[in-house]
Image (cartoon, rainbow, N blue to C red; front, top):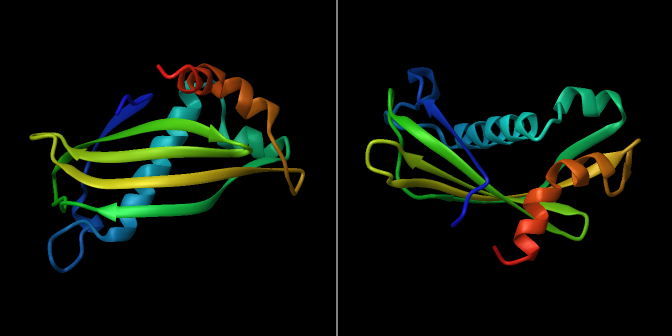
Length: 139
């Protein structure tokens, strides 16, 4: 898969459960953090957009847990963005850094609420235009 963004992180011991593996809910946090960093790279601030009355909210998630991460593991969180109608679809994968083992795969669909109403966001469309047009061209 051709990714649009990636970031490196490290598992902190308190993110793990009694089995010594990352708790399943943590992967959702990793993905959200990755999306927020991607927004910053695109020139958007999640907080500033909220102040303007535009909120991107998760509408649906499909999650697959492939291989566990452990304390102190470094990992790479990658995403690819597509647009389907008014939905922004983020394909997000997490790989253990040392061996590129796929640990997690997610498909996260977001929609925008503009002043509390489901709507397309000109700000998000403009910020994501390069990535969305790239997808539609098949590149």
